[in-house]
Image 1 (cartoon, rainbow, N blue to C red):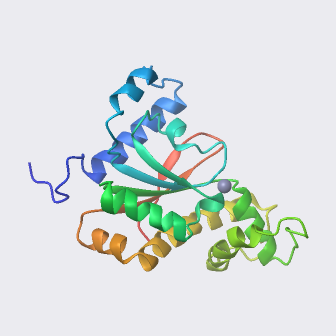
Image 2: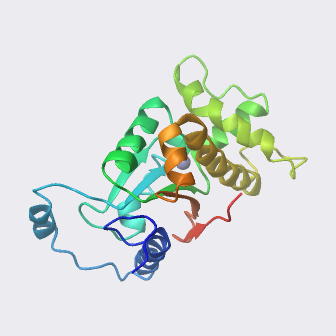
Length: 215
Ligand SMILES: [Zn+2]
């Protein structure tokens, strides 16, 4: 079997298809009946997840749930807004560069609170006040995605659901670019075909995950 990823894992195309099948089971109320203690026991000796997912902290967009996954199947990095910082990129370098994950999925979602905050900040609203001293670290990277959304001319704030969701999608592309810009290791692996990076959006209304076109 030809395998340009030289990996014991399925190909990234097979992996994303399997994730989407899991998402269908999740939406159909047909999640796998798992023997979780057996899965725990099966992974005592180590882990080799084929997938790393960068997602948001949102309680509705939990990768193991929405993709119907079990123990040892994915590395998850979750910061508000599906952004990455130095520690997140270091974690991804470990997940893909050392532990052998071959698919890196950036998973944004609709109605994202962090994206809404960035939309409002860009519109001149003081969302943080004196209390949320560190909110800037979450909002600041997303502001670039707000600027990149040029199709909306009025209602460019958190009250406009369509605008917020378009910004969230652009923010997924932005995070994908940032990962490649900031990590020589990961960018090199992607160029060499040893790692595939994909973006997707989770819809909090339907539970559906949609893979994004390449930008
Ligand atoms: Zn979110």
